[in-house]
Length: 373
Ligand code: XIL
Image (cartoon, rainbow, N blue to C red; front, side):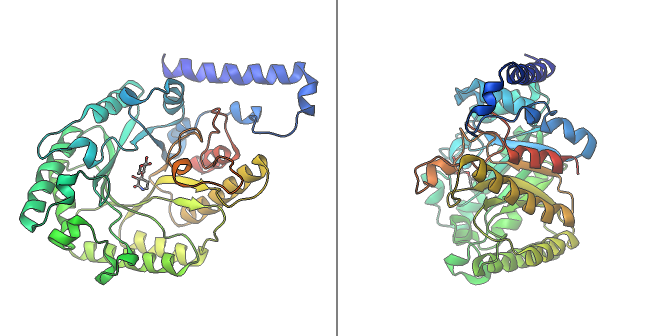
């Protein structure tokens, strides 16, 4: 099915919904539920907006060759400019044994992206998590350096020309680990010290001179001492990387938000301004809004999630229009948060732009607004 056909189909189902609404006034008597708002279904998809604004929309998901949910994949192709591999390009998947590479999932995503005129966000080359045992057990600088060299050059060269941006280093800061400068106590840091970050970016740049390279991190949004500390340490790191001329283009703001928390608007704005002043672009790469502690009905929760996303996007966009906005998943039916967080009332979380039946939610409307801002 071509994209035009998919779009036509989704418009058709929206029109049908509209028609049945008109023909059956009794529907108005239904209790308010998660049913879709037909006006939202009539709107053009998020990806069509990048043609106007230049801001690309992405979402994370599983590779087509291991993903049985074909309808969800169709929605990806309808809504998104960028496919973000949720796990398919992580080290444990791509190099499970030393020098034994498996790109079956990555290739499946790249092929899907090409067929649907999408790009791929490379996520992620160097992380403390999702590593195979042989990597976790590295103990020397020499061994870690050799592993990084082989892994980064192989993976980055393979997808050169098809990648929108690479998350080269993911989550380098962790104040709870109590190391100097709040570096995370990862296998990479233990073997190579902070130099692993420079090394990773230089290797990625050598393998792909053109694609934007990102440092990705989280936990910097709120009015809490931890977030304050994270902002401070992340900014210091970005400053040092600039001083050392490390080839890094962008700060990837993961943006895993919590609807019950309070933004520190002033501090977050200052932080983002300082990052931009250092010459980094901003990208929003893993947006979702956790409603684990939001009481109320489904429509009330959906509104809280949408408002929280709007407040956040307003802060970021008031500093700089990001190069892309990506959500971590597209539909509530497939979100990592449902695995990690359970609500007290037993209801399932609703952190994403489409509900579990793939209807557009208020959060979708917020994204639509900002994607053309
Ligand atoms: C998550 C995936 O969504 C889960 O399926 C997996 O179990 C753990 O990793 N920050 C990141 C992502 O950079 O790679 C993480 O993805 C979510 C937090």
